Image 1 (tube, helix red, strand yellow):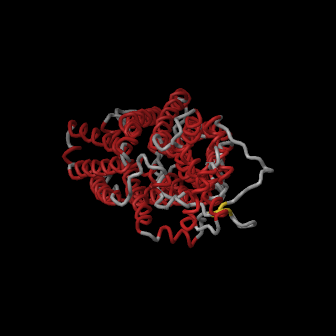
Image 2: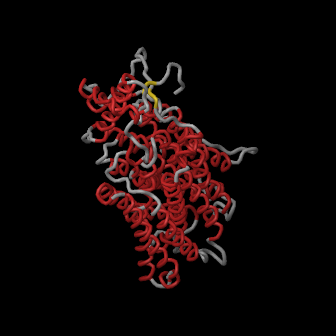
Image 3: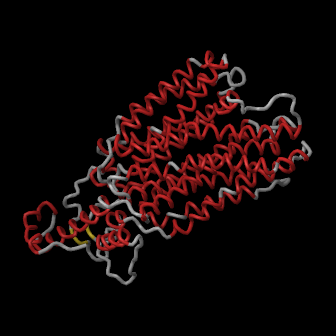
Length: 556
């Protein structure tokens, strides 16, 4: 990347006051470094889509594939655990108690909150590269730990699984800000939305993979299960361990690539304040897809805004910046209330489409097998019918329509759908035709979650903030979402059976409609990020961003 020519340098005298330099020489150096930074950023923003971008998408995406697999697999595995360790019922009707089920399922989103805060902050403090891969190691170890958990007189296996799932949740939580920020900071301006959507869409494939693997495991153990004693069901023990344990595989495959991905040039420039190294990195990864850091090279730090507690409150103390963070955080919170709340009704939907708890006189392990098979097939259908198409509908139009219109549309449609499903619940579930209509509305709601706020609440926080706070702010937004998930799973699950089995479900759906309506208003707080550079979105003046060369010994 070429330095400014003498004619350009000669024109810097008029910029000395704006940049804050002293004499003509220092002003010229500041102007040259500032221009070098902006030229490097322009190369990234205007780069053609290349193999390097594909690699970033795949490396980041496989993490979300693993995350979704591990989170979703427990919904099926919990039924298997119920047959073995449940505290309610016996034999083929044995299940986890409400508190046991909640503990196993809610441990991960609680861990997510801690992981999103911690990894978001650390990625801004020490770098994206240094933290990337650590969260995947945590996921791999915790997933393996679940698969080999055992029962003893002094140890309850469900308690062990809850602990491992909390630890796994910390790793999964870390994946959100890291993958989002790395994807956005390497992407070009024109394709950033599609690249980030492609990364996030791996959630859908991960959920589907969890259903398919569960079905294969159940089918493979069919004959052994049918020969089992209904009071022991040893084959079910193999099933859940295989289902959970296989979640390690994609993570292990991706680990090397995560550990070797380059640092983003934006972090190198704006946080480490090493413009020369960042410019060199841009040239390298855009041409060869690799990078090289010379340990003996002289590091030249620049004077530029630095992250600090005072600077954080100064930046977000301005309403135009605060409203962006509030809009991102609350929109994600409202969305996850519904995203996880909708899952409370999956058993009703499975019943309606013929994949609920089997009837017809089945007994013993035959009943167990048929129930597990139904759950797997039913969830495959629901994933394909609504979840996956929604992600890819967003992918097609995210850089044309923009993030804000898609999020608004999604919240509005979800409000309408939940109003119909909630207030018309009794009428819809009273007849076969009404049940079919309810299933259609349910799948449509899944579709508009992903062709709407579930995708955009991941993308916008990865774009909307300055580099020195981008990962932290994304972590805050994501943690707000998982707080909504915890509230949804704990609070709504406790309310679902008020007045009888599933009697309160219609009121839960009505509550979801209210939250979707509030999401419409929180979306109005965020600004559109389509086709803008990350620097333009950050609300910081980019002309004169670099003030000069940092004094020797000045802290990074």
